Length: 180
Image (cartoon, rainbow, N blue to C red; front, side):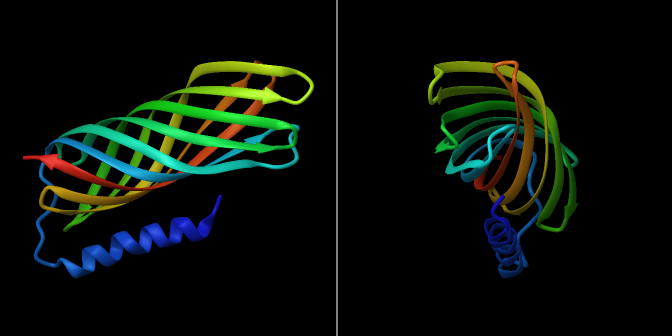
């Protein structure tokens, strides 16, 4: 996974928090958001990992200061390598467990991911596969009234075509808007 991307995203969130010392903590309620992602696929028996940059769409509800429920559509991107052409996406549903520090939220995510892949393997043909798998992640966010920015790492595993064990990791930088 590209650690420079993760470091820049985390530093960006912290910088925004430092520039807005008078901002209040996040208000609870419904929120929507969008972000950019960097996804990596580690496929067993394939020498090169596949990766791509893409996007995600976020919809959530935060009923309590320490708890939120969220659904995401993640375009995991497409890539080619080792004789494999891959196009993938996922829909995730998760609970976020948050700890507030003024305008900063640290959080852990646990839930389920419904992933879908379209794969073209040289010499074997084209295939599609999907399934539900557990997902987990961690993140940091900064909130300024209704606006928020967050950096996040999320991971889940997939068994493509009942044969290829695959770890899918995503780093994202997103913006959210809470409807107060």
